Image 1: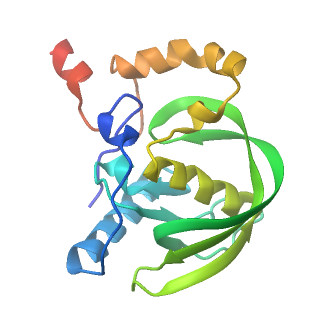
Image 2: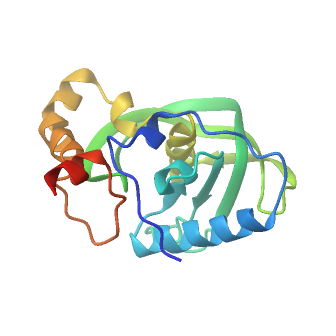
Length: 186
């Protein structure tokens, strides 16, 4: 099922998500719905808070990106960064902040401890685009958005767009969750 995406000013995006205690049937359904919702929105990563679920779950599929066609989709539960290497700057966007992009500096490689969809523990090394997407989605689990990591002067340049999203003045090719700003307009 395609789930609506929560946008910039929605409170769920600013809360620290809760860790999962173990696998269950609802987790399988959530993960499937997250992949379907992410792909429908033409995204490459999606965190559970973006679909209104405050749990430490994220999905990634960068196989649609040039040069990453062979990449396998990832389900990451209860991620914990163990280490980082190097830094790089790259333009980022977010399904929760439609039509807004900005330069963000992040570690270029990470070591991550996490559980998969079967709740099996892994320690993985990720770099380049995979590392960036994982960090972006982990930020969502911690109540942080990519615009929070932008330099102040660059953030000021996009403030008008952020304010418009807050007022519900957005147009997307995918469903977004209604919030108070939308309700006030009715």
